[in-house]
Length: 509
Ligand code: ADP
Image 1: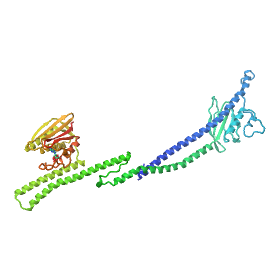
Image 2 (image 1 turned 180 degrees about the vertical axis):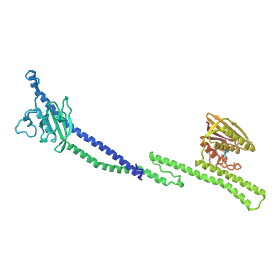
Image 3 (image 1 turned 60 degrees about the horizontal axis):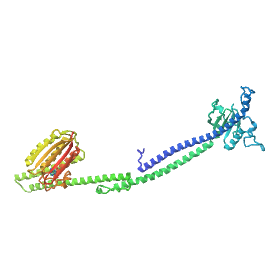
Image 4 (image 1 turned 30 degrees about the vertical axis):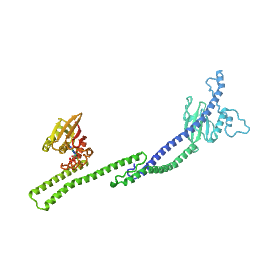
């Protein structure tokens, strides 16, 4: 809706609020207008109908009274059966003068219920109400003064056969002297009544209602727009506060947190989420800093040794044997540097998501068996006993090369950190859909406080202790990453001086 226009969230909310109010108001006003107009017309119709039908009821009763003597004549045979029992009770001209405001002074009103009722109607109803009585043959018998020389339509003009017992009244509009009237035409077998009322009053009421809505709606709209603006400003104030606080947090002061609002609302949850994110960023930044300093430290030592050795070699002429010894020492340091750089490269590639882990069936039995065959030579040459117990046909899904790298690292460490005369045992078991690889040694072990750190990069337990053992401290962090990628778990149990057992659990196929 606001896609193309670059509005602030506050303006959008105010506009949206205003639009909703406008649409609701317009809908409500439309419904109110139609309802009021229908209701006014219904009320007018009802009062016209009441006036007409009460008059007609009296006429009918009178007619029945007047017929009685004729009926008795007929029953006594004085009147032929074909003669109509017609008594036109409206045909009493002297009575008509009785109706209306002009009543000759001293004239005593004769007791005629029909004309009394007509008179009553003329008194009770508004002077704008027009009444017209017609005989059953359609001739106008009487009409109210306000009609002047004009007359109203009669029932018969609209419905010729008013044959049913109680013919329905007819409602219609009628133009008289340039004015629109609402008329109702009612009939009974003896006569028909037409009652009319000018619609100008209804129209005037509707016009007033319309102008009220016309001027009231923009005002309501402006007020709701202003209210919407303030409400939006109030609710977005906390967002502005967050923006200001968040802007002040940079890489150099990641220990800062956004102030938490006391309420437990959406804004508070947003602040919590942002604070958690900042905490994670702080941790990552700290790790990166640690990693950089560890990496440079790891690289600095072999480089310093290299520089020293080469400096000594250049300072004075040496024998061939001495040169060879210097070069061999340099090569050792270069190998160490290569290992560190390779490990770093591998970790950074894994972390940036550049390494893809293949998903293919791998026989863990064959893989572990092959590694053990190779490691047996290394253990032999070091004087470490090496035994294996490998279950056959243990299949898992994964990346063969990476799995080889991880398992090799664990077994290599076991031999590396086990002195001459010790033992290393490799076991592969398959239990309940799980494959368990146990690598135990009787080596130097790991102290309890170091156990949680062995998977950290560059972490080497007690560097003095393992200074004669080659290593970068990167091996187990790579192992952990590979196993995580295979949804495998690694646990370690160790006692310093007694030995270590690594337990890796895979899900089998
Ligand atoms: P490194 O290249 O130093 O072996 P690793 O990440 O593979 O690095 O291991 C981290 C540290 O954990 C090692 O420096 C060592 O102190 C300790 N460690 C790993 N495996 C064993 C083990 N089987 N016995 C004793 N210590 C071990």
